[in-house]
Length: 474
Ligand code: FCB
Image 1: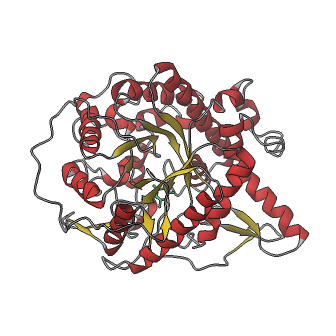
Image 2: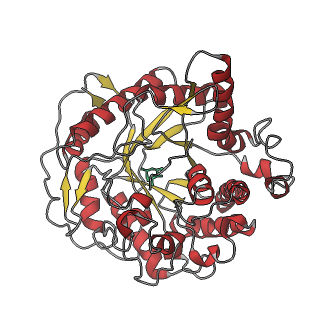
């Protein structure tokens, strides 16, 4: 079971009273050492650059049946036979729900300026809508307060793939109502946490939900239905726009935007056919998502290119495009791999890959992507919310260090070329549940012991800590 086989600020507010006080400061985080200092030399990043790390709720929290949490589609899916490697589930994951203070101390020790996490919709709203689950919400108050107390800016993602099962039972994202259920939930979060969360993201990678959740079925909810996939894709975008609108309606300060996984697409050779095919793939991979969110319209030719009887035509109502294009403050970019397209429309791999075979390592692709966004979509502030790699190396993960160094350097070049890049969040803070791959792929800066869940900093964590402390690459 291979993932994506087919996939073609830094100002920190003062801590505000939370619901549950944090216990007194604990012992130093495992492996903590004195902060490195020294003048910044080499590739120096702009002052206030938001060095960060990313996680998502289902991948790290565990506590799947605790404190009133409802099930999500990932609880259901991971418990079906044969859907995840080794039958792994997120029931315990990295046990972050119970180790939140230890993890906060590890983040502080790394020197993180920003931490991007996601809220589990079904933890705060067990049935997806209606009354809030106070105990579930309290967890996020503890997390956010703990971040602010440590000088780390919280960045909250509202949807990282874990649709409440109760809403899936009503049709999930295939229903237009789901976009409204999502915006209602988002509004409840803005009111509940918005006085202390300055940075919000609506959706994580709607493209992946469409491709893997609805087209190949290797992710939850496990559908293999192209027609449904297009409709779900439109409703996800509509949910994004409605949530942005709801955010403005609350009058909350702060920023909001979507987190899109984007791939620079290159012709595999110099033939006109390859160039034409690359344009078509770019339309589907990138412009189909960027144009509605940033320009308020589907790209010319994209909707028209869908079969005449495709249900997406009926799903797109007058006014939807403008709603989806509700002004974002930021675009969160997730970059893992480039694509090389042949004249026949096939893909070829031109660079080394990783344990995740889809992850073709090409740091220059990040430069190309960031500068392209500026060129085609203007000067919207950007932040990278995911980039990283899995490795079979345990704590001596020199390959991850090389990977990150090369991608940070590409980001630096983009900044030098005038891109308004405000931050870089490494995927991931912790080893975690990598969806259909279960725990077989380890993406963390921090090792999580598979059995005991004990944390240990990898070499990459120490290296990253130095980069952050110097705000520079040596
Ligand atoms: C991204 C997902 C994230 C993680 C990384 C490896 O597509 O958003 O949850 O799985 O890939």
